[in-house]
Image 1 (tube, rainbow, N blue to C red):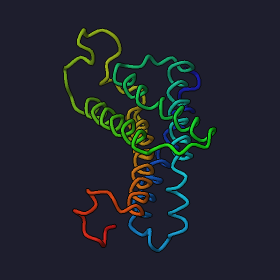
Image 2 (cartoon, one colour; image 1 turned 90 degrees about the vertical axis):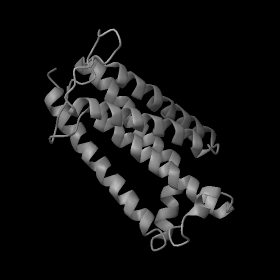
Image 3 (cartoon, one colour; image 1 turned 30 degrees about the vertical axis):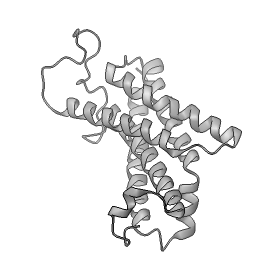
Image 4 (tube, helix red, strand yellow; image 1 turned 180 degrees about the vertical axis):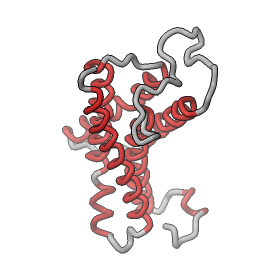
Length: 193
C-alpha cells in the first residue's frame, strides 16, 4: 500500500494520455486523406499498438493485485479474460511475422469494452446489487481508485480496450476499402470512406 498514491498518480496520468490518443486517432480518421502516410503507418502497425496497450493493462492490473494487494472483483476478472489474450496474440503474431486478422482483436476488445462500460456504470450509479450472485467477494461497485473525479480501474481498462478497438477497426476498414468487398461500407456516403 506504500506505493499506491504514486502509482495511482502515474497510471491515471497515463490513462489521460490514452484518452488523448483516442481523440487523436478519431481526428486522424477524419483527416486521414490529408495525413495519408502517417495514417497508413498507424493502421498498418495495429499489432504494435495492440501489444502496447494490452501489455500496459496486463502490467497495470497485475501491479494492483499482486503488489498493491487489491483483490479483483468478478467484472475485473472478466475484463482480464478479454484483455490478456490480446497481449499474447499480438506478441506471437509479431514474433512469427504473421498477419493476424484484426477481427479477433476487435472481438476481444469490443466485448471487453462492453464489460468495462457496465463496470463503470455500476461504480458510478448508486445501487444495492451485489456484484456476484452469492454476494461474496469484492464488490464491483467499490472504487479502489478515483483520480481526477472519474478515472477508476475500469476506466483505465476501457481506455486500453478502446485504443485497441479503434486501431484494429481502422486497420480492417483500410484493408476492406482496398479490397472493396465489405458490404457494410456501401451504406455510408462515399465522403466518409
